[in-house]
Length: 317
Image (cartoon, rainbow, N blue to C red):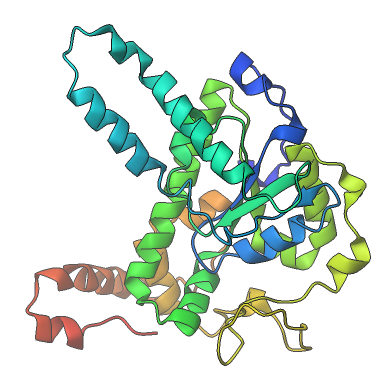
């Protein structure tokens, strides 16, 4: 069992700043590890809570995703100030005021004032800056098994296998590092949700999320959740974001079941074995490991080869 397998206890703020906002005043950001991890699915489900609402125009806001760019802006300003100026001690204040402007922008886009807005973005970039700009926000992160995520992206959007594997690994490292830092600083932890758990028992998962973000667990309609439609599934011939009824053969957990052992090994190599950190077991045959290691080195060296050879050696399932 990994740390992610154990449900987190409700958090008691240890810093005054964190305790300033009551749960009713905190926006909820649903972030996907990357696209195809279930951001839309969880975000739409969470919005069915009687105390939650959605945005009028921000379908996917990407506000947290761009916080590193905002931080670069703050740092570039500070570089223009003379080192002995006391204003350098006010950089966190500046970040807080910029974050306040972001909150005002979000509040003006809330569809039902008085309810907690749920925003969503299929990216975890910027989560290490949240404490400086939006410390009052509750963050829910959707995780999904790597091969299933990548297969879904290749089907839907034509992702390149190798770059998608590396992208998944970077996102996982971002989440693990930011979560550990928040724990060390005594900040409210992220709520981590596995897409596999959500697809298997959405009502139980959502009640757990509600507990973590300060919502009434009884605020969901279990019947509605049970019949919740699918949005943007990679099983659709043409991916769209219109609600679709789940067909009898709908099985989002089996996306990469056809992957051969060498593809699983390649994914595990490119993602540096991070699946285990999230509690995911990879179904791979360990026989032929010596050959696999040589193959990994060959594919890793492709970048130094002429482009014609790179095309010839392009990794395929």
